[in-house]
Length: 472
Image (tube, rainbow, N blue to C red):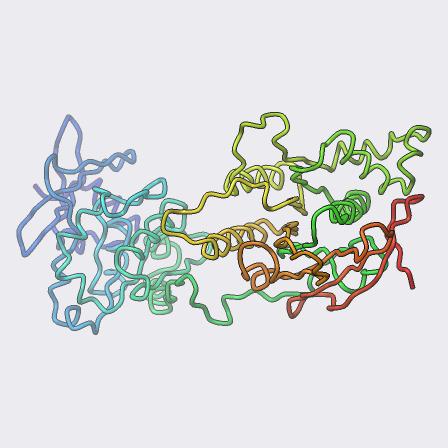
């Protein structure tokens, strides 16, 4: 049967010559009481499958039980394609393919079943891509694929899948002009020359880990916030997207130091999420932060009005703890999931994990401790960058030998030298004599490009105002 006049008009309205469509075998087929526009799928000159669609509504179907193959697959047989000289355009539908052919491109194919609405979980078992195996011998010799998927989420899913299946290094993609989302719309809106321009200027498909300078956005000055301790204000800052590691021997006062930083941050900057694993939330953590926010002594809390401080804590402090359910395992993955919720829901911009060893650590069977620490810190740094938060971890060093007075650093943290290698900032809090109100704060690492400097200051804790002050 020849093509119905209504179908010819529908195709022509898309900017495609009906005679070109008929050249590729498009025709009208009466089925189920309706007239269907039928697109044949050929392989080596033989019809293997058909796609049928209604033009009155977006409804498709293919021949039951017929195999999936590319539309216009026979163009892959051309010596120019098989020698790798000519690129092959892959579209999401036959109309986009016909638009490219209308513009003068010869080697154009279309996937048979459009784009997946959701991400494909397992490409190796996805039935929708059975055509890859069917054409494997021909596809392997193609030098370049131009992926002309639609500019919508389903199209992005398709392009991602095709790049993974065919090799991203062989793929290019198209940027469509507004308001178009596919080649057929470009043809209808702007004409065949614009289709030529789009395809001719296709860009290399991005490969994760390999970039050009144009792939990186321009950056202004690094955003940073003061730690709130005057003695170290020029040495270290709170910087979203970075990892800060704080170390020092147990019971030296690291948590008090962190309370001072957290309290100032809550009062002046933004919400903070604190993992309180060793410190009781009430009254120890809450009272400590109240004192910092109000700049008062702990004994003063009995007589002063804490309403304003409590409002800040209630609005800006989020707490991750196991005290409610001590049997619950807090793996790093679970901890980061809580952090994600705090960031997305509550606007948290700083996360404090105190201490590292209280997380439930589960190494893989084939993983030693060094490999495990490396993997975990990569996860943390990726989280910090992805969600633009400052991530602070308190990690204990190995226990010193009897009589050993060395000040611990990042390399002394139990587990791995990765603490020193992967941290953006490194801080040590050390009291030479635990019986004296005197401590050294050492900034042992500041990654290049970040505000701050390495150095050491000696401080004492002013119990009257809950502040660390320099002894100089």
